[in-house]
Picture 1: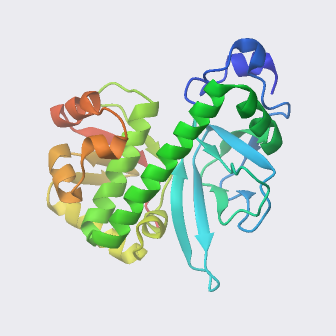
Picture 2: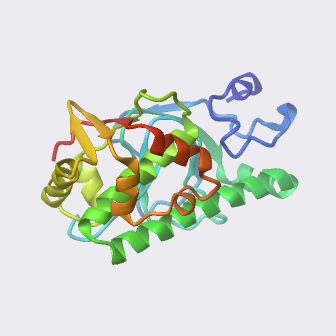
Length: 260
């Protein structure tokens, strides 16, 4: 990626390069990579030699058990960085494209050198990693202590919140989420059948509706109540603008086919 490409990067202000002045922003001399849905950026157990900035699309971080069961640890969105470690040890998890993704590959050693030379970049990287950790702790609490219904509601709110923060839209517009019920199940520690029941229950309660690949949140305040969620904690930052939007009208999430 050259300086001109970096200058017009769609996620530069959100990404790790956001605080770098133009002459310094080239962290990735390699060309932008495009991967199809289902491809692995890197596999569980591989050494981490590259870090990937997501320019477009969705990626999940996952861990596989010996019998093939999968736990989705995190959903990475445009602007997120995945695969960073301060050393070259093997990754304890893998990363897979959930949709076609556009990636900016950065050498791990180059990123470490740049962070050592630029305090702003180092602090921004630390903040991004902290946000990832905070979301992981929230997910752990949800899986460990919340009911099945609360887990599904919490995940829907988390994804909606994160997308809205990255892609400000006017009311009535949709946000695309390329997830199936199996993805949701692997993220919240349930079976796909159980997830289907919980989505059906939320629909029966008049909180959401879905069909033709679209989730619509009909009663945001009720969904927060069911999830047992706090808006500011979930966002990890002041949430007043989002709360005003959520409580003022219904909102749409464009989803995948919700198949098993």
